[in-house]
Image (tube, rainbow, N blue to C red):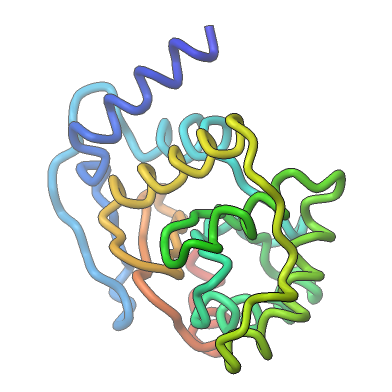
Length: 204
């Protein structure tokens, strides 16, 4: 049953997932979408079923509103975005579901696999974030954790990237959120910790 649902979900993604009226609540750093939603696909289905159960993510935090953050291990702006999110997570004001994608460099799939295939994915992600900064600044990725992706991980990374593209994102970081009215919003690119904190009261 789950495999059939995933196939159907992928069809929905590529036939108008952006039609879920991605609403950005007037935030100056976001891009509004106003297309009418396609049949059967709604913001609630996308948020509660497709995103929650059909993509692969690593969750950090258990309090506050949930956002999805698509990240490539070799994206320097993703690393900065992680640093902006961390204080809000620690304060219990935000929950982030990090969605690994791997397309920026040849090393990205093996590095993302080191997160997903770890016995403790969140610990692996947090460790990676503590050491990736110097690697990004120097351009040397030799000491970053890498694992050969399994077929399962390769499939998961592809589905995550397909989802990111279907949502209209072209790069990382890519953030998706849900406002209190139930509609969805997206932020293509990095924002400051202050902007993120200002967004929180508007979120579910």
